[in-house]
Length: 257
Length: 222
Image (cartoon, rainbow over all chains, first blue to last red; front, side, top):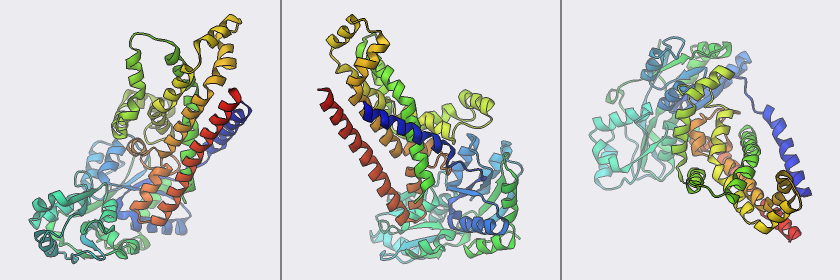
């Protein structure tokens, strides 16, 4: 019994100090996955410049909207599609209607060594499909990820949606779709331009912009939630500053004037 | 290496074990000794989290603990914050999810105690509580140890439920398993590899240590 009692004691000891650890007082900001690299850089610049810190959580816009309805403790929401923000605002869950901060674009990406060329007109995909050279093609889940929905619209515009159906692999968000598309196990995918421009991703494949006219615009809107404090407010304002806008432009976003 | 997430996972596992240990002792003992109408149903209910997909459990927890549920609203009124997407919410989910891992081995442990021994303890004039402490617990200990080790290791590996009710908030609900998932999505394969290896090592050591301890105890008792 001695050994196990000692084990129990150490367990209790381990619990107590840990209870205090890992508590974050910094505001939590829910950001769409296409912002994974851009927003991380902006948060770092925000910290250097103001000394204030925010915690970024990335995921699909639709999932975040659901979580906010269930009471998730986010102070700010940076959506990839403004319709989700409009719904939350109508339900009284946000401080106001928010502000547009960027317009996103989609690209076709192919991993190195794929049989396909990166081609914004999707003609290479059409040819590869006809030749039976496509086993898997990655997009984000169109049900709750705005970039997945736009990918579907572009594929429908090109008349490839039906043929591609059984080959599709769906990422839970656009960042996972990018992971799938560049893994080498799929011949390609449609992901956010902002992710393709990140060195971590562009090292893995080639990409080409898909015409913006092929899908409804990705109007990205941010909004402060009811619980927003001064740091979240400062970050919200910082998104409109020159350094933040420069970073967003570098990641291929078109910015509102 | 994401230390905040690892510490959070260890904290969650520790608390889950701490809460489930007394539950395992009393529920396991009760199920081992008593037979009553509907016992099969109770045992089936205890085993349910083992066979249900974590997403099903996660869905029910999200709905029953969420901001629009009576429980979620009661918690909000008492503590001024939401229950889902917080550590206490995650702990509730973890406790429910681990019920079979805690109760089953404990029940087997108590079942292995010969009835004659328990009767002898009663004949000696031991109170039920004293008999539990001096006779039954030492004998059922290997089962309880397995229960706690499985609960601990299983909590470290929990993913689906955490994804559903967690929200991936650093220091609150972003456990090591979620952090690995995030690292892969963020194209940080090195980070994911380091954390996966750490988790593998911790889980292996936990289970190995338990088997070693129960074998040692078993030898000493026999």
